[in-house]
Image (cartoon, rainbow, N blue to C red; front, side):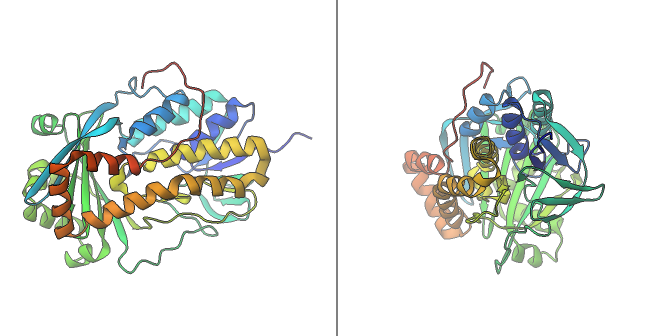
Length: 371
């Protein structure tokens, strides 16, 4: 009887990374996603130097995709500013471009892709709208989208909301953001800005639910209020931001880390570890988890899920602690301004924090592609 292939739910960076490794080892994993056309996901427009290395080893040529080089971090906490060189250059690229390339790479390696909207996990069974799916182990890689039967705890008293705007190409932002990722720090939140491969600007905000409530529950009113009170942020948004659509995701459980594993269930990416987004390491965790899960499955089969979750947790926990500390500093005006003054006088401290929030990546043989 032909063996059942492993099942991967979610064709983002984590699921595709696992699919590539499994397929290149001679298996034909089934990769399920709800979108036939790859969307532009809300988070992940910046790739750290660690992520750049991981994707190169998977055969993803980021330069060929038009990724923008990023070598400097600029921080703003009105009225303070600070800049520092990143420990190593990163890259910026839209999630649509990255996810499309990774999906194509997985298919080329021999992965079978299926389109279905999975509604629930029942053990190692994925219940979709089209049919019920089973496999020889289940890789759960749906990002920030939870499923019944495998949800993450959301018990924060003032939960975090994610908001995203995509600003059109402008000469002003092309000049001010060239080679730079910016973090604008507010009370109970922050915004990250970076250019994308087409010259547009990705603006991602992580704010507390209480901030949105204070703006009448209207995300546009909230962004307008933040702009009025933060001149540097207002300057980056320009006058046309109000025409941009605002996408949102609720109750992001920053700091959560999967500590236990169900037999045969491999939790990947944000379903395994949720690092605060100001670290810019979410995609690295996604890719690293996919690679490590596939390597563990190849060696131990579905029974390796517990070992995988332990190894991933040990690798991600230090980075999550460092990023959580940075987030606590960033979300309070007094500590944010103090932190920027320290960073301005000792840029090495900021670079140390940036390096401390990286995740140790599983090893793969490097490929001869540009990075």
